[in-house]
Amino acid sequence: MMSNQTPLRGLGEFQLIQEITKSLPTGGSIVAAGDDTAVLPYTKNKYQLITTDMLIEGVHFTADTPATKIGAKALNVNISDIASMGGRPKFAVVSIGLPAGQTLGYVRKIYQGLRRSAEAFNIGIVGGDTTRSARVVINITLTGDVDKRRVIRRDGARPGHLIFTTGRLGGSLASGRHLTFKPRLAEAQYLVQSIRPSAMIDCSDGLAADLGHILKASGCGAVLYETKIPCHRNATIKQALEDGEDFELIFTVPGKRAARLMNEKHARFKFYPIGEVTDGGYWLIKTNDQKIALTPTGYNHFK
Amino acid sequence: MMSNQTPLRGLGEFQLIQEITKSLPTGGSIVAAGDDTAVLPYTKNKYQLITTDMLIEGVHFTADTPATKIGAKALNVNISDIASMGGRPKFAVVSIGLPAGQTLGYVRKIYQGLRRSAEAFNIGIVGGDTTRSARVVINITLTGDVDKRRVIRRDGARPGHLIFTTGRLGGSLASGRHLTFKPRLAEAQYLVQSIRPSAMIDCSDGLAADLGHILKASGCGAVLYETKIPCHRNATIKQALEDGEDFELIFTVPGKRAARLMNEKHARFKFYPIGEVTDGGYWLIKTNDQKIALTPTGYNHFK
Image 1: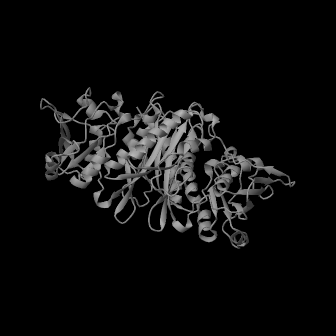
Image 2 (image 1 turned 45 degrees about the horizontal axis):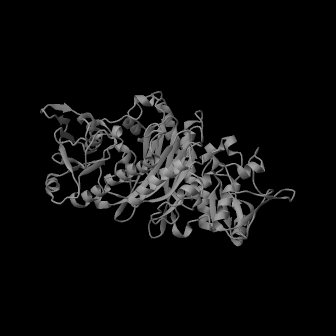
Image 3 (image 1 turned 180 degrees about the horizontal axis):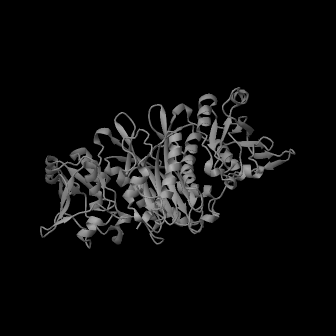
């Protein structure tokens, strides 16, 4: 048991989450704290989804970041979470902390970005909270729903399933893409309706860490191929594996359906097969066939 | 139209809320941004409620505030919002920003306070987000539900209705009560089931401001009686009217049902009649019968 005196910088974010969620009342939820999106009882055929994300000046963006991008990102990260469960976003509430010396124009721009994303994805912004704060803080909670038979969790991967990503990875923070990405809602909807992935997650902590979440929840291992992993221009394979904030979907598909996914003509979307689920172990096969052990850890917010 | 260069400290919180909510997509919600709690389509007989509140170190509490109280308050302010709509709380998601140098023991205490309140009010804590932050920030979003025929809004007050509060007012911040109050959920449930108030709100911005919200939404005025307003010990009538964070319910009741409320024997709760809804104007009748104009403004977060 970790001591009360342990400073947070000595813990990883996942250890901290484990600590604080281990004895919380779950109130009859289907999937509760510890996942990015909670799954709750709703109607006869649907679950409700609910997810929340906090962005803070000096951590997730700077005083120079264009305010429209902050507003858009604050909503888009949540849309990405709902998409990765197979769901559709519905309603958002927005809490915002603002310095008293900040201008009305700045706030208007945050909401402009927010509104643009809400309109693009048909989301209602139905409430919120405003308060003073030394630094800008924005927290959005987003609800969604999902057909019960279409919900995708992290624990359905099995040995032999192929692993895919919806796009290029790496260098998101350095390039500024982490502010301008488009959540993969259309791709996710196509996948849940046509292909039915066995597990899915959005890539926020880095490929190695996020695929690691799927493998841990599913009790499996995996092998990834360096030659197959699509890296962004100027991004290395290390960045593709370890950088966070790409917000591509990472998902696994049983063999026959994977073949269909790769052979489909006229596909509106591009999906990249990058590896295979195995019984155990977590490996990267390098271009020179060298085998490197992967560690399922990502960005540590407290270091 | 206010200029983009206007600093936020030159605006009231209500003006800011008006600014940012005026062109948001509402996505088919019944009551949207601008109220404390959104009312959303849910089942045949019920609406879903959703509310969110952000607490920040240096604004809502200090570095010395006991962490269990911070956790409890963060949930309790949201329960109070759900209660004031006539609803029952269900599920919460918790975002927390923490300094890397803060200890695990501090975080455990925040969650201890949170868990205690969640258990007392039968709430599931089903998800969240953790991040680094220079100062402690906690944001909770709480869902709830309410029978469609029992939902209470701010706009149902009519001339002749009596105005009540569930408890004493004033001095909440100075006394520390703002950290330890118990949300009036049981009182609210009793009221919606037995008395059916015509309008209700929780007192977070101060009596004059919160009753002002009811009057504005209902298109009415009011007269309050100094002799009737229950003040906390050491709190003046000015504090009762202007201090925030009491979290008592303020509600209006048509004449006959108001009489029943005041005459009921063996009542489990105490309700204080403090005034009457009128056609227009907003007045306090002083102990010496002097008539003082009230202004419906409360605590300005940005000053």
